[in-house]
Image (tube, rainbow, N blue to C red; front, side, top):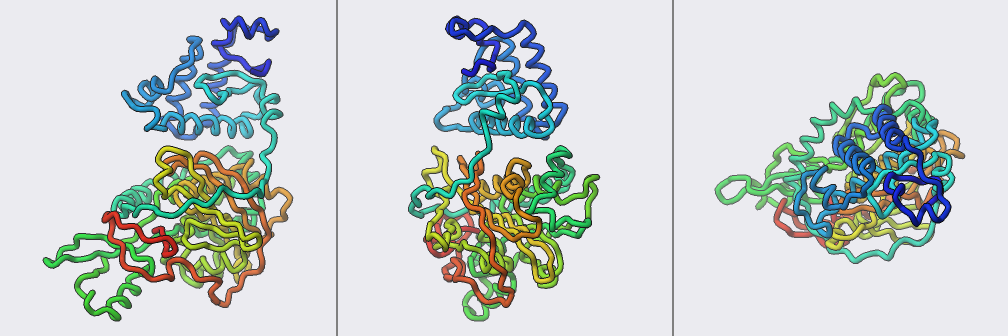
Length: 476
């Protein structure tokens, strides 16, 4: 344990005292409480009531001089009594989030504090640590272009699209509340001045927040009742469905347009963290519009600054522009990103069964480039929800993408490949793998590659448990 790192529990640790470490002063309890108040006053935990309860519980335990067990936290903080720690990772996920929130707070609005709250890995207790010592110990995170983890074999399971569609409705309703979310001013200004964001928000320009949505249609049974919702990879609009029925007359009266589209759950979280960045310094809206990619017009693509938030498989009309100027390509499925320069393959693993117990690797691509008329396009696209949410967080943190692109002049087109560690589709951390300049985009409409959803396949009914095979589009 570093000499300057203390908890109340250490007061009675004779071994530590014998090693020459001075005991903490008598007002340690008050100093711990004071730092908790500083974090709360500075909105260091955002609006998360769960993290606030966790912080209070850890404070109470530290004041009592004891370290709680994981099962005790699950019961007392989250009301999950009798859980199996091997089967339930909720406490570990929240502890990880709390550590990250504390790091972000003391790197931003709390940077002027003499000491900070810390939680050493391997235990659930609050400590006090000199802020300068913590910053020196952490150091900057390296940009690593090392070989990725071996690509897992594909064999995922089908999405329960009906459930996602219901959640997506809640996401859209909640976005009105999340619109008010904001970050500390100093960190916000740093992010807004970075190479990824400055060109899009210059002079209060209008910005469209483009979200990757998916079209689903109904399938009628012999009685004429709609009994299944279907997501088919080559049917992305009511017009596409009409074309299918025209070429397959036997589907007439069976397949029916219900006027339904759905959003992945991760889009809502991404909107929450991105919205403050594309607002004015006074947190007033600057004409932003949320536009489903299915409704993105050619005029908007040419004239409007835009930020895309969604899956790689949901890019729609943005897909060819993104990959025509990129060193990256989509592999056999939208869960795989291939580096054309090095031939390395980055295969995501959240959709695999093994992710139920062990952390998995996801990937996201952040692309920033000018449009036809000089408008600015920022794309944050993940393989799945965890990658999308964590990449959006990374792109809007002062110590994230803004720090990695500090040497770039705003207006420079670039790609950033981000690796995301996730557990049960919850993002835990993000790491920059490759930061690379982009080529000029080919706006002629010429296809850049053959994408997975261009391999036609049979409809995938919602909730049937049938999984599309690898190489034929495993998402959406």
